[in-house]
Every structure is written in C-alpha cells, then in structure tokens.
Amino acid sequence: KFKRRGGRFYISPADYRRQMEQQLSGVQLQEIDRDTLFLELYELVSRKVPVKADLKLSLAQNYMMKGPVEVLPDSILLRGPENELAAIKEVSTEPLELTELEEDFSRQVSLLIPEEWTSINLDISKVSLKGTVFRFSEKMISIPVSVLNLPENSELKIFPNTIEILCRAELETLKELQPNQFSIAVDFQDISE
Image 1 (cartoon, rainbow, N blue to C red):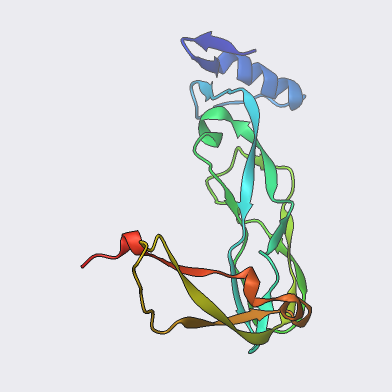
Image 2: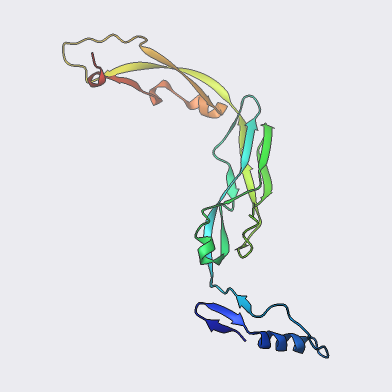
C-alpha cells in the first residue's frame, strides 16, 4: 500500500514488513534497516528524437559520396519521465570510422546510451548507416564573364574575360554539362572607385 505525503509516495515500515513476511512464509523478520521506503513515481511520456551518426569517413582517391549518409531510422522513440526527456535533443550512435572507401556501404551501429538514462527506454538499440560512393571524373568548362548594369556609352574591360570551372561528378552527369548552364557576371553598380 502506497501512502502519499505532499508530492511523495512512501510505504510505511509496518506495511512493507508485512508484505515481505507474506512472501517469505514461515520466516519472521527480526530487523529491517530502513524506517520508511520513499518512492519516486512519475508519469511516462514518449518523445521522438533524431539520431545523429558519429561517423568519420575518408574516401579513396578520386571517389566521392553521392548525397548524404542515410541514417535508418533517422529518429527513435524514447519513453521515460517527462523532465528527463525534455533535456534530450538527439541520440548519437557509437563512433564508426570507415577509411579509403571505394564502394557503397551499409553498417549496423549501436546507439550510444548514457549511463544516467536508467529510467529511459528506447524503442530500438541499433540503426543502419548507408552511403553511396562513386568514382568521379573531372571536366573543365570555360564560362564567359558578362557585365550587368553597364551605363550606355560606357565600356568595361574584364580580365580575364572567361573563367575556368573544374567540375567533379559521375561521368554520365559530366557528359550532359554545358557552358550555358552556368553564368558568371560582374554588376557595374557594385564597382567602387
């Protein structure tokens, strides 16, 4: 039987002594070292928080990532006391280091659960980290520099009048790139003497 005093719950010595003697039939307790058992009771709530990957990647030479690393699932459901959940902004994974990557990857990684989370439950304990890696190619594209807002009867010499852009992407993407997809301009109104 719980009793309540203010906002705290407790079990009196007589009550918990009787409960223990009932469970230990035929045994009589001589002494109990605690006078009263105080209990901390709280309402459980659920909260969804994002998962942050603690991931160090290094790619092999001439390789790139295609998009960001996927974290699956990208968030998890926590259940526990509201006052403890309020302070949690994210859950991190255990550290993972992948080096000299040349191909796609998928790894199961445990979530990092701090020791002080004794009253917090997670709906899962592991997530998947996935990434797409590809060998890139390079293409130089020459782009002419144009002038904006040039007053009439004025002339402006630009040096250099073209800019070389180094593009790195998959070969199929580079084949489709054209100079007219880029523009580089100088605004005459932004020029100060």
